[in-house]
Image (cartoon, rainbow, N blue to C red):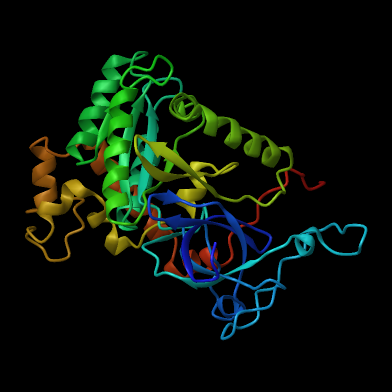
Length: 367
């Protein structure tokens, strides 16, 4: 790589060191290890997986290119090597993150930026589908400018439930894929969709960054293994390492995967549950109606300007609900989510986002 500014995407950040995959014409280059400029720390900015960045070589002897401030100090791991240095200090880093491009969105838990698609896996059975959780995820995604896609899995186990879920989320305006990850039924349609979306985003020079979410037992791992067997081996290894010690810092890693002739980035979030995503990203109450796409044509058409779309006369949303154009479960969950947001004051939500609750270690306090 020549000594010039190169654009890339952060795929991982651990201990103050960031893996950046340079984005070149015709695909991605070889990953490089970077430190961040001290300026980011002074400005209160933390580089995140998914960030589009500009990187610059530090020089043959590790000197900082002219015009750049000091590099951000590397966070010190607990142990030291025989030379009295931390492991991170021993790592040779020849690149620095010079700039972080403006972000399209930022997530608190899992911590990442610029997610474009969220694939929500809903099982038809074993376990019973959690529609409230799914509707929280889709609402947060829509509010953050992320496209939700619904995957209805285990359709061969309970076809009737599969049809019901498909109807609910098709009415809501989301792409829906009815399939069985175990048998492979319908997976080809999802793969074709991924190829088409990856091509669109690649043409726009903003590679697709996607994450799959699903409660335990939804079949997410089975689906990922079927579509990306090589990737599954990598992510399972990382997940096992992280789950060995609950106190271990959890991180997000993006993996470049092939969708036909195109490349997109798939986020693996080992150790994270969907509860983390919803707990730390509850959207503002005033944004909630707009986070339900099926309400869109009704907003501004109600009799009352400050209509809550819950019980008012002349509410366009309720009229559409009564006409069967909005699923009852979606409206019920809209009300439930609104009640949850009202119970937690804005100042408290902002404080939690600034100081996330530490990961529990599993140790119980002695009575």
